[in-house]
Structure formats: C-alpha cells, structure tokens
Amino acid sequence: MAGQAFFQKIIQDIIASYWAIPATMVAVVFLLAPTTVWIDANFAAITDLLPDALLTTQVDGARTLLSTIAQSSIGVAGVMYSMTLVAVSFASGNFGPRLIGNFMRDRGTQLSLGWMLSSFVYALLVLRTVRDEGEPDGILPDAFVPHLSLLVAILFALGSVWVMIYFIHHIPETISLSRIIATLGRRLDTAVRHLKGGSGSNPALVQLDNTGWRPDAKIEDATEVHFEDPGYIQTVNLVHMRRLAEQNDWHLEIRAMPGTFVDQETLIALIWPQAAPVTDKQHGQVRACFAVGLGRTENQNLLFLAEQLVEIIARALSPGINDPFTANTCLSWLHVALASAIRSEQTAYRDPRDRVQAPIVSFLSLLHTAHGTSRTYLASDPNVALHALALLTRLAELTPPGPRQDAILTEHRLLTQEAKDQNPASTQI
Image 1 (cartoon, rainbow, N blue to C red):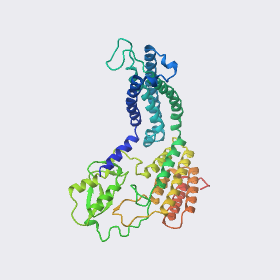
Image 2: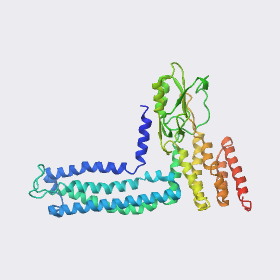
Image 3: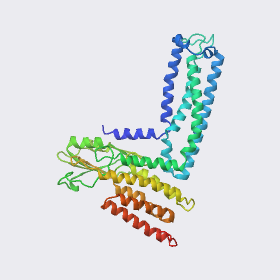
C-alpha cells in the first residue's frame, strides 16, 4: 500500500527514540511476571527443584527483597536517565544539534534503561502476589510465596548490577568524538556500498543515461503532483511508486527525495499518463508514497551523514575551538566513502524499463558535500588544507579519466587557491 512510506517513517522514528525498546521490555515483563507466578501456584514440583535457600524464604523476607529490588532499580534508572540527558546535552552543544539522532539510536543506552525499568516493574508485579495467612485474594492460597518468581527477581537484580557497570563505561564512550566520527564514517561508507543500480528502494549512484525512459514526452504533457503539508521528506516508497506506474501505464519522475524541504507549492513528482488522465485518488496515492517530518534524517539520505561530518569540521575549525586534528579525521572518513562511491558508480546501471526516475545521488554530489560546502573551513587552516589536498590527490589517482576525475582536480585547484588566499604567509601550500 502507498501509505507504507508513512509506516516506514514511523518505524524510523521509533528506532530513534529512547522509549521504544524500554517500553517493549516492560511489556514483556507484564507477561513474564504473571507467568512465573502462575507456575509457582500450579506446579509445585518445579518449585521444589529450586535451591533450599530460596524455599525457606518467608513472606516478610520476600516482601523486603522485592521492595528493595524495586526501589533500587527505579532509583538507578533515574540516575541513568539523568546521565544520558547530560551526555546528549554535552554532545549537542559541542558537536552539533543534528548529531542527537545518533545518541537516540544507541542500542546500549536503550537496552540498559529498559533492563532497569523491567526489573522495577517485575518486582512490583510479583510483590503484590505475596500473601500471608489471612490475606486471601480469591485466586492464590492464603499464604503464598512465589519462590520461582523470587529467583527471577534476583536474577534481574544481579543483571542490573552488570548493566549499571556497563552503562557507566558506555556513556563516556558514546560522547568520545573519535567514536562519533568513526560511527558516522562507517555508516556513510556502508550506505554507499549498499546502493544498487535502480533496483532497490533507495536512490542509486548511477550513470546519467536515461535512454528510452520517457520517449517523445514533454514537460508540458506531464501532470504535476504537489505535497499538502510542509516539512522535510523523510521517506519515499519507490517500490509502490513503480507499482503504481506499471498498473496505470505511467512514466513518473520524482522531483523531491528524502532531505528536501517541501511545502504546498513544491513540485514533488511529474506523471506522464499514456491513457486516462490522472484522477484525484491517484494524486493521493502518489502523495502517500512520500512521508514528511520536522527534520532531516539519514533514512534514504546518505548525504545527511556526510553533512554531519562536514558540520563537525566546521565546528572544529571555528576560531573558538581551532581543532585541526578532528577536521582531518572527518576528512579521512569522508574519503573512505568517496573511494567506495567511485567503485560503486563504475558498476551501477539504470534499467531502461523502469517507469520511475528518481534524482541521482551521484559521486559528484557526494564530492560537493564533502569538499564544496567545507572548502572555506578547510582552507582556513594550512595543516587541514594540506591533508585535504593529499586526500584529493590520492582520490584522483584512483579515479579513471573522465568527468569524476575532472571534478576532483577542480576541487583540488579551488582549494589550493583559496588556501593560498587565506594563508598568504604559508609556504607549504
């Protein structure tokens, strides 16, 4: 269905949240606690297999144990949330606000918070089932101590100790700038390597060869599709868009891809119908293939990953910070992705039978993001400029003669000239 773009966006939003995994783990505990209590109440033979030390626990001891686990778990969870917010605030202020999503997606933090909350909820749910004589609830025996459930609660508590130690180590690690840069660089390189020539759900690094795609069609003959709500496009469902084009005998050109800001006047697609005109319902089906949000994300938008590295470069080379080593690290990771883009683009293709044409994430656009938008910052520091020029030289050597090598040499020439203009006293450039 066309609305799959909206659901894909929702999934990405859930992944980039602190509440999704903890909420899921708590929901599992809501099933686990009644299950273990039911086993305690109905399968005495299983309970008898437990260690004698657990079987001698009385009602007061069980209540004290469960209360202690619940109180300590929720207390530690509160401290962990506070540490997380401090780390996110620090990273946002020092490295850039657009990097917050990288911390929100951190699985270690999500699982740690989920474990502590699960321990708290489990202890509470089991605590309410502990009954002394004279306190029947109509379901459980008058005196009831769920020994198996106590064992599970103890295991939760022991696991919480390990989780707390891991979390204290993990939080400083997540705000390590070298780790942040390496994580972004690896994700960017992976995104480039996974691009395929027009056959997947993402735009591809492909050659500008559209022969036979839209024969004898003019822009004037196309039906325009505009979006109704303003925001940044976060997801495009290309698979369903191709299905619509085949079912209705259309040729369809996408004008706005993930990362583009759209409003009511923005053209998002052009449709060339071969037979019947495009109906209002079909307009809605095409619009439903797009999902917008309040900000840009890295979903289907690898250039956003590159821009985050460029943002770190800009901050590192600002007069108040002046950290050329961080800028050099970002450049090195950007060039890992550029080298992968060269290899990917050499083997990419566009299927001439494809009825949908999407804007191309080309090597040239990635090169412009890495060097064109950061040239002023790179040229301001002689050491960074020399490192960037060396990387461009090596990249040009890896690239066969043609437009891409020409673009690399042009960036090399422009950076050299601007670096000389900004550093006239430097003799190394």
